[in-house]
Each structure stands twice: as structure tokens, then as C-alpha cells.
Picture 1 (cartoon, rainbow, N blue to C red):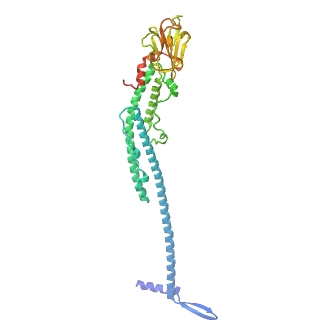
Picture 2 (picture 1 turned 120 degrees about the vertical axis):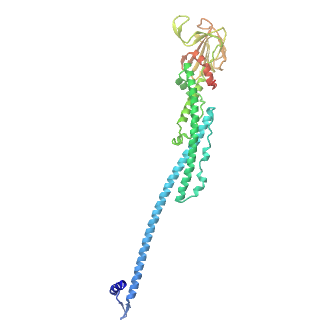
Picture 3 (picture 1 turned 30 degrees about the vertical axis):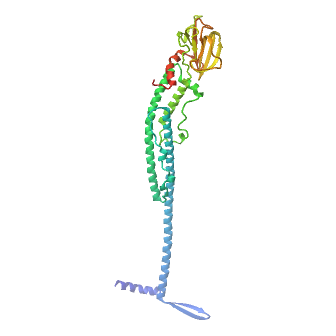
Length: 398
């Protein structure tokens, strides 16, 4: 019923839109016409509408697909860009860990060189780090594969980092033990210097130009590249600085003239203020008087170079030795000189015989030690000789 109603409603409209039409043609005075039926008009209209629809659909599809492709390209470009950023970050982190692991190994080598303590074995961290150039996961190319690659590499790097921190903790424990040992030795050396009447700062100031025995810097080539968030360097720097100070003090102390010049003597006059034996007035005595038998052998207080071997006014026959690093020893009132100016003398070498030449009232040795152009009490150095010898021989615990 409804279909009949629609047909009856549509039929007059179709006849109205598509009535039979004639097309007239005039050729050489003759008139022709062609009748286009209603059915042909409908068919042509349907075909035309179909073409228009097809063209519209294909045009829209083309534009829509291009938009999708462009969006995908933008998304892919962003993924690649993010991957490149992650790649750079990964490589930077890997380089930091590589540098830190090499520094860790160098630090361990340094620790093993300076003290005979229980050694912490540091693994070859350098070989643990993944070599990406030879890694099969480099063949992964699409976005999902790249994400997988990042996860794989991060997992490997995490293991390396964990191993690095574990080794660092072990080494840190070893460093603390060595610092305690160095602190103990420094305290012993400083106490010895104080007992000898020497000032540490002055001793080190003059020791600047001495040939240092300190080990070469173990972090040369790495210090500026280290990432402090990966490898804590504070404890090692503390150890290295303290060890360098200890080495400098040990080196400087080797120049101290601590040998007792006459093997047998008694102290007849101390260092400092005393009454002059001739004038009976108080005067500054810059050395000590060591009395003994005539012609008692006088030995050098330490190794050095003879700078004077001559008669020297009130000192009589006189020898002066430069021991280096600001230390000079002086020997007066000798009965005989057994060295010449320019001679190199060793510790305990005989340089003369005890006498009473010059301004002297009895047989004795006037013995002075000067440091940094100032006289110091030779008796203090002689009393410190045992400790100085321990330091020279590295026998702190004996």
C-alpha cells in the first residue's frame, strides 16, 4: 500500500522532471530532431550522479588517507627523535660508567701500591659493559623493536652500574682503613717534628723544590670526566691528599741531621741563654757544648756537602755542612779537620777530631744546627733521632 502511494506520488514528479524531449538539428536547410525518452534521461542522470559520487568519494578518501599518512609520519618522526635523545643519553651514561670504572681500577692500583693491607679485588668492569657495535639488538629497527632494545640495554647497564657501586663500596671500606693508618703515621711524624722543635709549615715550604717521592696522580686523564653522581671521589681525595702530605713530610725529614757527632760525651752547656765562660755575662748560646776526650772522633750529623772547612775566628778549626732543605750543621773548636770544602759526606762519617781551638776554655765540641736561617736546639734533634730513624725506615710500629 505504501509502495503504491510512493509510486503514485513520485510518478507525476518524474514526468515533470523528465518529460520526453526533442533535440532539433539544422543541416543544409534541413531540420532534424531526436527524441530523448524519459527512461534515457533517467539513466543518464543516474550515471552522472554516480560519477559525481564516485569522484567525491575518491577525492575525500585521498585527502583523508594523506592526512592519516602525514599524522603517522609526524608520530614516527617524534618516536625517532625521542629514540635519538635516549640513544645519546644512553651513550653518555655508558661513557660515564666506563670512565668511572677505569678510575675505580686506577684507584685500586694506587691503594695496592701504598700500603700492605688486605686488598680488595676490583673486577674488570670495562669488559662487563655491553659493546653495542657487536650487539645483535642493533638490528632492531621499528619503534616497538627500538623500545625493546632500550629495555634490553637499560637492563644490561643497570647490572653494570650495580656491579660498579658494589666495587665502590668495597673499595670505600678499604680506603677508610688506609686513612686510619695514614692518620696514625701523620700524627707520629708531626709529634716527632714538634719534639725536634721544627714547624711543619716551614719544613714543607722549603721542601717544595725537593724531588718528590709521591706516587703520580692516579686519576690523571679521568678527573675532569668523572660524574660525581656515579662515583664518589671525596674519600679517595682525602686519602690522596693525606698520603701526599705524609710523603712530603717523610721526604723532608730525611734531611734532618740527627746523628750524635761524638759517640761519647757529656753535655757541658745547653742551647739558649747562658753565662759566657769568659765575660760571665748572660748571652745567647746558639748551640750545645759536648765535652769529651781530646781527639775524640767527630762525625757528621747527617749526609750533606761541606761548605766550610777552615779556621773561623772564635770557633777555631771549624766545619760547616749543608744537609739540604734548609738544614745546616756547624762544628767548632776542632783539633783537626778531616774533610775539605766541597766534599760530600755521609751520615756518621768522621769529619774531624775534638779539641779546644779558638775561643774555648776546655776540650769540647761546639755543635749548632740551623734550619731556615734560624738556630734550633741540636739536643732536641738528637733525642728525636730514634723516631726519625723509624720514619726513614718506614718502621712506624717497631
